[in-house]
Image (cartoon, rainbow, N blue to C red; front, top):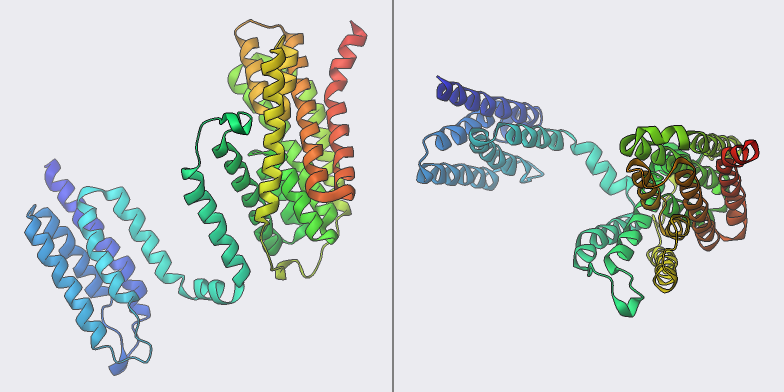
Length: 416
């Protein structure tokens, strides 16, 4: 009974996928002597043929059926009398056969791929418009550079610290390069879709969960390139700090919920201050009617490499100081580590608090030190990427957020 149910389910899925893809092809088939071959019935039968061939459990039967379907597609293409003969329908027919075969062994995968194929076929006009009119030549080259950086260079980069690079891990450096380029590229897309006034602040809020420092640098690069977007980029940079405070709070909730009673006021002050600053910058930014038409470079490869080397240099300097003088105390260790990354030292301090190694006052001070030194790294990145005007504006906000985070600590000391 179970085997019969699986067989019927496979056949039903194959038929459904054939009908789904066939309906889309039927609508584009045309009429008269120039109509294209293969519509809803042909695609449905081919999908069923694939499933039946696979259910026979005879490899030669599946191979023969595949050859027959491929031959049918080739013959139809040769005899095509339309003015614009393509191979989309022929390839879709063969893919539908393979989906019928796959439907016997993996229902979920076959269903997902079948829906994706139907969607791809149905999106013909939007895809053509995007590739030929919306996407510029420079943006296409930038997309290829980003893809090569992430999918070719990054996997090949050595993944161990090198002594002649002051203990810096090349893969980590290149990952930072890819991250900065990605943030700039997404910012470019957001700029065209939503305009600078809304797109860049939203990008900063989202990208801040990945790396607030890289987001500050990417926004600075955008502000240097397009000075008219200065306040929108500043808003994005400050909103990324909202993400930093929120992420540390979520880490505390996961690692040790009790630590939120200690860290909550400081993180709350920092989050509200960063949010207020971001909203002010958003309000002061001016919409531009040309935002959606922005083209040109999505990012700068060499600038991204330079920023990644700068931030990695800070990391190497921190590692050297720790190696020379040692992490004499939790405060020193977390403060030094905060220059390179906020989340790791904060998580370490919260974990120590969870195990009872340090007390509430120590974990609060350690997290605040990491938050403050990480703000210094953001300030350096802001000046390096965005210049004096952007750097000064962003730095003032970052210092205000850091000062707000220390308010509960100072208040507690004054009361004590």
